[in-house]
Image 1 (tube, rainbow, N blue to C red):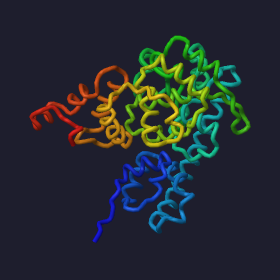
Image 2 (cartoon, rainbow, N blue to C red):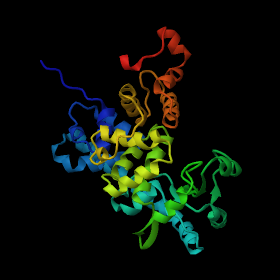
Image 3 (cartoon, rainbow, N blue to C red):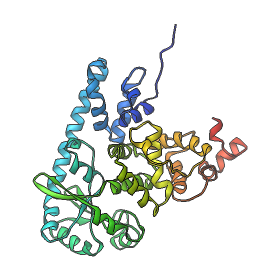
Image 4 (cartoon, one colour):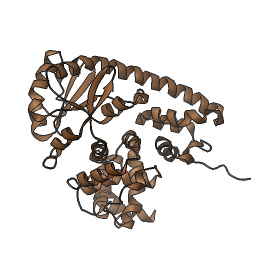
Length: 354
């Protein structure tokens, strides 16, 4: 008797979020595990979009799960609307006071794509000019918003970071003056020069140019070392395929940033067969052996799960060091495994032999 094929829920989840055709069949998948991963990683809206057109081919258990996801995604959409309404006055006051801003990341995506109403979002990110930050803070403080100092106090954030969070009634707006602690000369000026206006809910908002949306999405994912970042990778997939002129401008902008941090997310999408990702140059600074190592490590980190006994936070630390340097991944992972593992194995860990 032929044994049933068991498909890892983690692999299927990544495939569904990236709209890979082979993932649409749920045969051999533990739906309970798949549902748990999807809820934990807050990617249910992506799964719902991928699976709904194929609902008639799904069994009763999967159909019931889709119904539960619809309720969950609707609840997220309602929460998004509540937060948007809470922040609407603050953004309107900034606009009325002549403080321009650009919607970043998920906020920019939702502004251009009404179909993403149910995409999970915990805050609204906006980019200000550095000289407008003080005025923006005064306006928000006057409306009852309080600065979030849970990570660093305000002075520390201004000195060591690139955005401040302001909260009111559980709604948070992050005021960015850059997209990283230190960006290339002239970069923020180009963000403003190439930004575009889009209409949303009767208003007009600025969003980044397509090449800057791609760049910011890649850097954001790499800055977090892909850890728990499946939702952000699925966001990046939405920006593809990109026209040739956008790809050319991205290549130009990428020269001022750590190369691996820009190209690794796009390389992974191309590896997963996401249409449009293969059109970018394969500029990832990694040899064949490192690439073999990267794919399973990245997949584990996207789900924030251990890999070959390596806790996710340790793997993320090693990957972050690799992404933002020219060091070899093989020189970073042994330290991540730790002395205890090396002593137990009696040699350096060799993930490729597993």
